[in-house]
Image 1: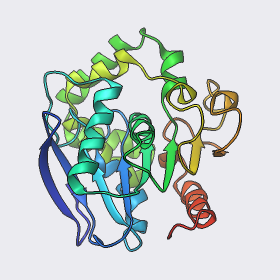
Image 2: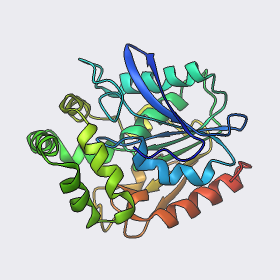
Image 3: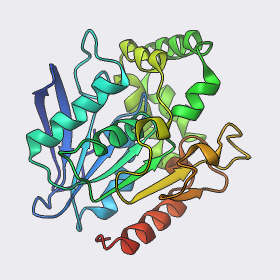
Image 4: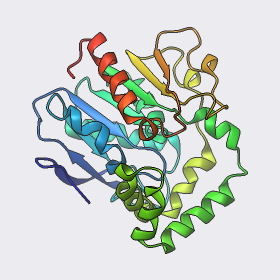
Length: 266
């Protein structure tokens, strides 16, 4: 597990689960909390968070059943995952954070951002999972179980080489995440996710939506992402569900512009 210089790896028990999180070196700055996607871990979004380390108190964490966090007997539903994030915010004494979330993490970040005691400065949602999981339905569960089992029996090196074909930068982090994720997380996909507009009728704060290229992910429907407006929306050319991983430079540019437009440090 590679931790950038000056960052710290810590554990804390919250919401009946022992959570692992990593915190950056600038604890006196506005807080940027980064939440990873399903079967990933904190390392998978570290390349996104690291450039903001001088301007923010960066916090990345492993969702329950992922990374170095505990695999509890239950709690693998969207609301409990959001409760975990809210508990971490409370424990760290976070005030007016910026949230960044991918997929599962985007759902958790949105749910927490809507809670009256949080008052986030801004929200970045990288491919909220509702539209994808609506298309997948329940048919994908057996395939996902088999995939989780295969990851458990493969070596780290075998997984790293497989991911390297898609991009060397993320290969080691993805291999580590797949070796760490536990089969119990399958409950997250079984329970599904509510569409964005069902969680919040309008954006709870300045919001950036990073969405896939419709030609790559044809299930995406812009009209279902707060069709009345209120959020900045970018469909990223050539990107699929893992928008940042597929187009990191483009995503960084969109994020930096969004932060500047909303008076946030970059």
